[in-house]
Image 1 (cartoon, rainbow, N blue to C red):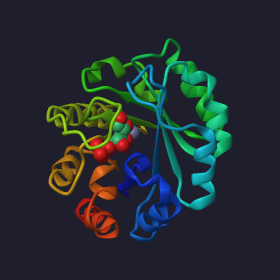
Image 2 (cartoon, rainbow, N blue to C red):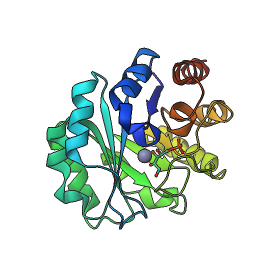
Image 3 (cartoon, rainbow, N blue to C red):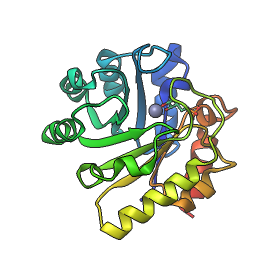
Image 4 (cartoon, protein in one colour):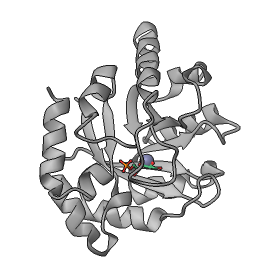
Length: 218
Ligand code: DX5
Ligand code: ZN
């Protein structure tokens, strides 16, 4: 089943519990947590302590997107904090296979994230080990950016390879997703939809989640 994953990056941190409860009651499936270090991306967010608080607030699974250098140093901390999914970027990883296996050994779903300029081809020898691929459809670092339109082509390409090889690998999309493009993105083969600004900056958070969920469930 296709899943809506609100990203708390765009939530009001002054009332985080309320924001999370609100998307949960509207039918959100997963809470997406964006971890940034000011090096791999030009922004800073939060670490395992906040993720652990989020885990206390909600029963939903947590999807931790690591936009940091040396992600291998922090896998156990995020697993202990309650991560159910962890994605690491292909672009700054010297031992990606080893890291994916370490994540899976901790009974956490292991994902590979790729930036808009990284070709699908670069995933060729890692796809069979990944539980999911996170296709960035904006340059990572900030919420509320415009969807990079050739991401659709990438998703279609990736879906074809997954189907052809019978890989057990889901596709997640992250960046610029909202009611206007979620149908097209879903039709291209996406399984998990990260939505930040289109949920938390909308007039009605609940309506936004419920509306997009209805679209992807057809
Ligand atoms: C961006 C983050 C995204 C972000 C998406 O670097 O990885 O998860 O929250 O936000 P929107 O949906 O507003 O583009
Ligand atoms: Zn993200």
